[in-house]
Image 1 (tube, rainbow, N blue to C red):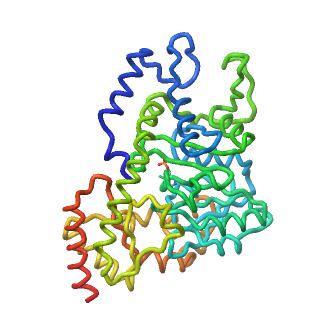
Image 2 (cartoon, rainbow, N blue to C red):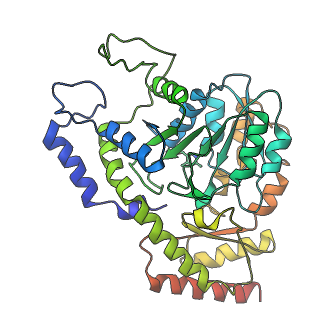
Image 3 (cartoon, rainbow, N blue to C red):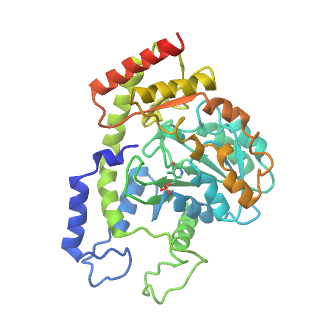
Length: 390
Ligand SMILES: *Cc1c(COP(=O)(O)O)cnc(C)c1O
């Protein structure tokens, strides 16, 4: 997830340009007479929508708020249920709680993405949305998921915080469901420091997203911001001009980031083809963005030992296993006690997911990894495997 690896002079220039041209007006709205017709957030939204191939994009303050704004756009309300995956960053489930709905958390399969069969089994008359997360750089099984969702007429929200620029059977991730969301935090594929985006092809969803993220503002074209009305009750999840300016630069680098990352992943995975492990299966190899090589070992014990030996070689892992606590529902006791769901069962829930996640090692693939580093990694991994697996 390496936007930060290619962050530098171009981003600095974009900020300088903003100050040089309009004296540093950083609010995305108003100040029309002073801002020299510069609206960087608006430009970023238009460029992002064009890159993703959708008519509408709404910039917001983070990937977490993008999820909340997306759920509000879909009309999810207190009393509703939202189905999502047991393996995701905690924000996905927090967003459901934020709109007053009840998260229904279901198992993953070995793709590390939500199990389509588990979605179908969890649908009830209260199900108002399904949040699919394209985890760790690879698309979920969207064909099966969309079929199930359509059959039950339930909208799909794609949390695409972790696979920006990825595709599924040639279609851009984030545009297959009713609404797609993105994160531009410091660890993501493209970054604005903090920031997010909501995309959709549906004008009604877009208008609600735009209003909700900005206190309900209707964005009148005839009267000023101070005089216009409100469409709905909202809040403030606005992006600022600095982020818009940086986002435009990073968006220009997105395809190159993903191309270099995929090349490095192919090189590393090629050198590991004889490793006696089971590699993560992918729903669509062509559609991944390649920011991790993930494999499964035989048991939890071997996996823990493997990760410890990697640390001895100064090799880090990517979330699996080091940050599983923030990404697997079984560890979110703080939420269950506060919101009273799964409070009595979380320790034994999602056993199928635990069996997969506790045997997984994720190797980070970086854009700037050199061929030498990749070879060293492969050699070390072979040594560790010889020692622990034989
Ligand atoms: C990073 C992330 C988010 C939250 O994005 P922020 O911009 O950090 O708020 C949501 N969902 C997933 C899957 C993420 O990885």
